[in-house]
Image 1 (cartoon, one colour):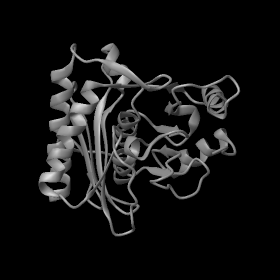
Image 2 (cartoon, rainbow, N blue to C red):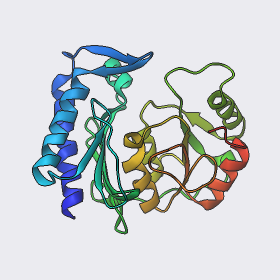
Image 3 (tube, rainbow, N blue to C red):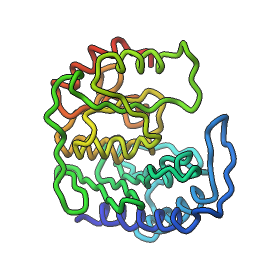
Image 4 (tube, rainbow, N blue to C red):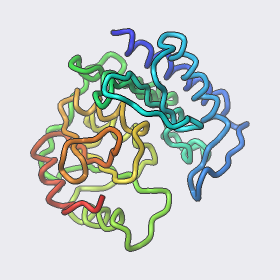
Length: 260
């Protein structure tokens, strides 16, 4: 395990410890309509940032909560952190949330961890080394057609009946085996890497939500592109992820032209 990956794990466990300690005693407030933040999010991010800064004080840091905007050059090391992916689930006591941490150099993902503190599942990946969960090597599923696929989607906090995201959802419901909306983009990607899900797509998402998960899927043998079919862009991360190239092509056919 490299020092980058080891730091991802230590920081993720530190953040998760804060999430567990804050259960039942946090206050929640809205950052935007239907977009919530809690004391636990803030405490988790502070713990994560402290762990990273202790080892890599000169690296850039991009977190979901209270991070100033940074300019990232091609040679800059940057940490992308979601201290609580699935805040609404956490607030309601719904057991589907995680800490997500990745480190990139410019646009190149190097290492990442997604940690589910309730299930005690640590998903981790490093470029060229593979993807793992609690010591077990991950491999995406062999599903090749949408009709056999369990697919996940992330929708924005607020959607109207005529938005493109809803139209995508309706198309996929008609053709896939089933569609899930879990509330945690990070865990959705981890599950694609593990083979629990066969595919996952989103159009309104942030880099810190998906950086670690995209690396997991790729290192487990999966495919990730932009929703438009072009190369995935870490800093404009609309995407379609799938267990393999054949399923990815079928997904793109069902979803149709992108609006993003």
